[in-house]
Image (cartoon, rainbow over the protein chains, first blue to last red):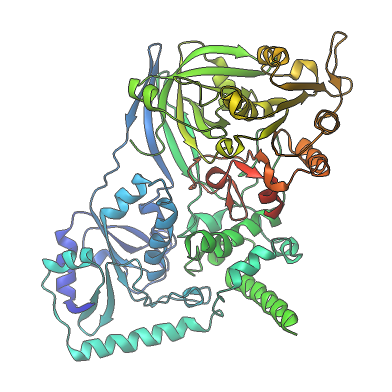
Length: 351
Length: 276
């Protein structure tokens, strides 16, 4: 991994040189909050402010997107394809939890059938992560095995140092991004300063939640019928807000929208396993009838099913689900409770 | 062409099976698809009525019959009602084939018992014709099929045809109260009909599809007859959107019906979390 130094001016030039740059920007409706939005100049970006309210997911899997359009006449149906190639874009100051999430979701999007719409956008995007300094008590990235300094999913990872940024070049795409940039060799002082900043950032989040043990997924699978599930979701309203802000939730619905007498589009829309109709069958039968069953699915999918199928936890510990939950459901707290149950079982079986 | 884009198919024949169940015979519009399309018995597809959306059904025709596919569906929701409004010559969308299939190759050289209830005959019919079209490669063939009433029996012309064949045993049944004065079949629920019609599990595979309640009460009958759980095959019909393992809807624990199924053995189903 090569390390370079970028001055503020270098980074500003980099932003100016690219047509489409997305970065955290102060929310218009709430100055304490940020959203990932297109910027025109580096000065538009909110540096070191709160974690953006929504993840980067919407830039790869939009809340709603057209899969095809069609024209239906007496002569038959004509389908118009949508392009799978996307406009090049740079995402600047991506939070490491959001950047990592993209690589995690890549696995399911490439499972036997390649989702070209997702990968079209992935391939056209260069991600410049930034050492996270906006963690709060809901963050638990280190419990997942990531961290505020995780390079995962970023092409370049920046750390603020005196006078600019230390840039760790992680991928060839990152190399290409910095090729036309006046970045210089990083000084030893800058490298040391960045190392201290990374260590401090890790310490801030490490005590928020205990690390998830390797055998946790297997315990969840074995304890599908554990009585704890019954009461765990009593505060869950089933609104699905957690899924919409989650960087890794990727479930979707496919619907047709008939626009005129002849034309229409087929869309994919975000959906959530927390809503009551998600698994409702045509016969009226629903395999997941209660909210506790639906909540169990969410936990099982993230911490047991996805790890079993893809070797990855489907969560990056961003904590957004806790921040938006109207019922006050707190994922690290819930995980802590489940891990304690798992450990208790282990202790008992060990005796 | 992205993975969510369907192929266009033309409706070439419509058969009304019951008052609310219909079979569409479909041909690919693109000649190369018509020539090259292949599938295995038990696989499914996403069928679309443009303007209303997609629905998941099995392919109900046999892979031994080339050049077309058939699907059978009961009108219950938006898409199935829209499909019902279409006529011969109209266009539907099709994505597939998806999922795994019945072990037709493994079954060769053995006897097969087919058991179906109601519209559950659709996936079983696909396997039945596959076996019958290669009849000399199998030993005994038994079909047990039942529905709530005589009016709910599907594929009636084929039931006629099977009843006249000497190389298979057909047992038809309707629930008590569902019979008509001229009904010649059994008046019994499927589990009892199976108990009567099937005498041995020796060297035999069982394929079983129907409503969950029928499966639930037929499995113990098959076990009592001596069928190993690994030799009993059924299909699961969970709600799906993509059929490709991405939309996150059809899983039962870590098992994805669209990718690991829709065909499962009774042994596999016993190991799944009981959430289906």
